Image (cartoon, rainbow, N blue to C red; front, side, top):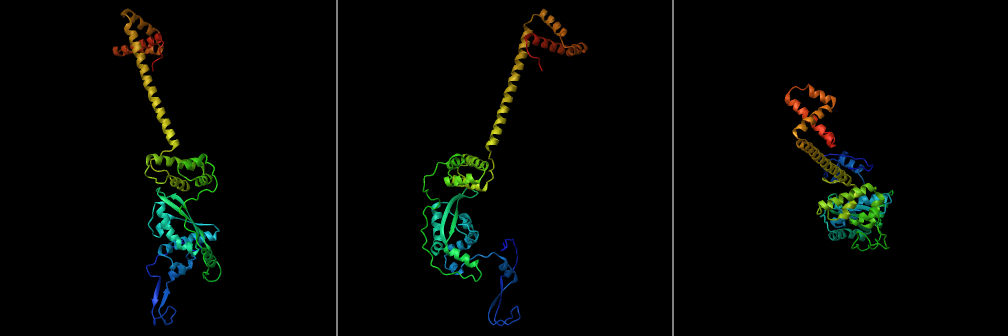
Length: 365
């Protein structure tokens, strides 16, 4: 557990929190019990002395229905912190409250609204809550979720004042103000003035279902590369896994706020461009290689056709010319060869090179 000083503390005990001393038995201080006593164990006293304290009004708590009791216990941490730090509201995720309550979690707004309206009603009536607002969002799995913002009412402020003032935690009595009715559609109030059309990144967010107000807030608070990366991921998910995300705008807003990691298989614009460039270059290299092979074969065919078209007496003269005009090193290699097959091979090479020169073809590799 976390202590009042903010330090993490841990204790493991296999015992109850207290001992029972019956009438006539001996108390820890040596006295004889004149009634039944509950004696707190030292470890439990240590926890009570160091644990965080919440300003709960237990008379108020016991009069609440079970779900409203649990909300009072859960939200009191955030409410106390909001008042202590002079923040206008305390925030709690609907999914988190359902987990802690525990409470059945719904994913349709109307069912969530009806469910939470019943839980909020006694707190609004008592003046503990001055107002409640919902903001549509999504969890890490893309499922619909809502952030609940609670405005502290007079009772919450009175509890905070009592528990932060020297004296005893006696909650003063007061007449709570009439609570306003639960809003029917509190996800977002309609604008009171004509809103300017979003531009740039805000327009791209709005086109994917993010409200204009939230889109403008995201553009102000987060760097452009984060927004564009999450836009790419959302577009990819919409194309490849259309059933995964029920509320695209809510998921996108939450993904930007929490900087979700890219899902497995995702390929960004830069990676796609690099892969496409490499693919085109490979295709170009293959085409160039095929063309070079075809050119080489056509040149060999041209040389062979030239040779075969010569009459026998001209062939002998051409071979003599080829040997006479050969590179000195090639001429020496031919002269040094003694095996007939080797001499025929070298003579054919010198002849083909000479024909290439006659036809104006490039030197063969």
